[in-house]
Image 1 (cartoon, rainbow, N blue to C red):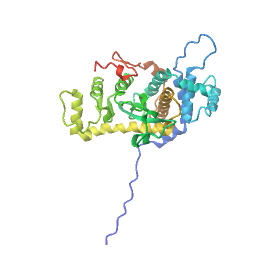
Image 2 (cartoon, rainbow, N blue to C red; image 1 turned 45 degrees about the vertical axis):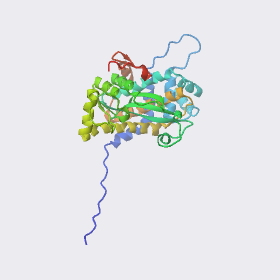
Image 3 (cartoon, helix red, strand yellow; image 1 turned 120 degrees about the vertical axis):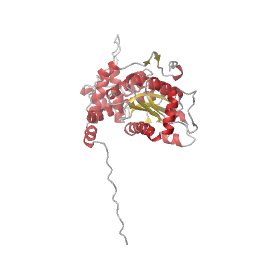
Image 4 (cartoon, rainbow, N blue to C red; image 1 turned 60 degrees about the vertical axis):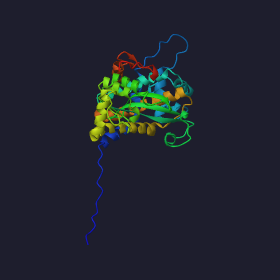
Length: 351
């Protein structure tokens, strides 16, 4: 009788440099505070005229980021605010309700959007392939997002959607929009793509079939970005009425599936990014109204970016200079078209 051969399992090999990873994680909290402080220094404070001096805006953002990173409630985070004041990071300790008022201000959203993009710009030389997707974040009264996505009889109104455009190499979030859970993904794509292209060099963009739109293909073609977006099963052949880029990518999708898939499956990194945010900073939003919830989620994305920068400092030996990035930052105008928060008001006529 032949003896049975026992096959030992092949040892898995990971590409991660564990020494650099350990250095990043063991220094993350200290460096997070330092980088958050550097980021808030680029904020221009409004001119003081009269009355009681207000708390600087940079102090609000610093304390908000520190609170979300620590996953503490507003009252518990006050001790961290005091420690930060003693270390010279903030000018005074704000009341916990003052932080809530700051998040509840509509003007905070535009400021945080700018800071989010600037926080990603130190890694722009490492990125040229990007991915786009959205995911839901529950409020303090809701079920988990997975139950809403796959379950039954759960209302969407209690959820917010975070739409993000990321770099697939470092998982940095370059652009984000926060909308109610019922908003369409594809309607947010044009303005996010154009704004990201203004500050980053985009060679490829991968997304799921929810973003398969002729408008999206035209915009990506206009900015010389190759779209890797799957087609629906009902699509059988190129259509002369469709844009040329749409037909060319369909032929690649149909005839060279393996080559197309090597680019498309970089899209999995955007799902990894959402997992990183939800595991590190939580998948629920503690604020009680829509305005504050949008700002809270956007601030979570900024905290995630700072953590990605810390890892990149050890992995790629980059230097973070937010002051220089703020000078290079391009506002929400691309090719003369004003990019607004409402997709219905965006002028796409040139595309």
